Image 1 (cartoon, one colour):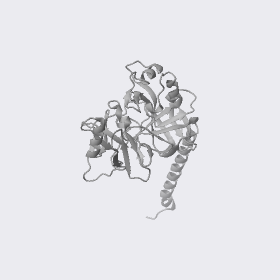
Image 2 (cartoon, helix red, strand yellow; image 1 turned 90 degrees about the horizontal axis):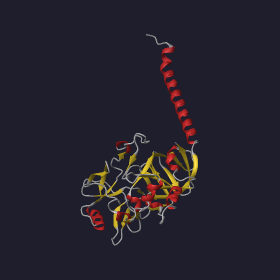
Image 3 (cartoon, one colour; image 1 turned 180 degrees about the vertical axis):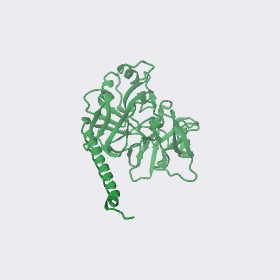
Image 4 (cartoon, helix red, strand yellow; image 1 turned 90 degrees about the vertical axis):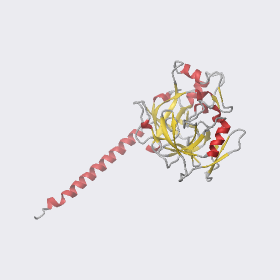
Length: 335
């Protein structure tokens, strides 16, 4: 059968039409995305950056960091990638052991392959910065509240060290290895209004990988306290200074850091953070405030009954990766 010219070019036309359609759709999405990013309003600047390599351990102040999908990273050490668990493989925090806040992780510099964990009256514990999984490695399923996470056991020497310092037997120290599948937020998110999406990951954080705090809100609460507390009592990762109103973060939908309008530097606000007794821990002494401050006053300020959890700060996640620095401008997309 003889093939006509129209029959011969039909596949080419179909391909060309499809290509034009996809290109047009891509350009439209980029344009709409750019217009959306332009709707962000400048509200302040980054005034504080903190990370906690050991979950519930002492916060480390940073001048700059790499923001990743699973938390801040500095010197090759990531936020909340080490954690203490009990004999039931349930996480241990300042809620039960406030002295964990006295444990400090020293990264030893970006070129070091080792971290050093320090605590009062203890010889430093040296560990590999990025422990490798080998044939003899022990992989544990550990529980953080209602969800389970994969972890790499750090060995008997580390277990003995943390058990000795905290004076609790059978504790283990575990690591969130990149070679293990990390938990997805969608697996344990209970609030249908949260902006959680498939692919949102978390290491050993209670929920999201970031906690963003408005310094004006901190100042507002401190004005009501006899003894003002440090912002670290709230365990933030990113502190935003220069905001006009206290608690305006309640209305934030997304937070963009830096002058560039890039999707990779936009943090998605998931929900307000429920606060607990950890806010009352004296980070220099490792004991809880006898009058449960600032939590007690915070409940009054926020109009929450004693048996209800009070909200302060915003849990957020990041799909991209970006470099952030103290002083970077902060823009917000309001709800």
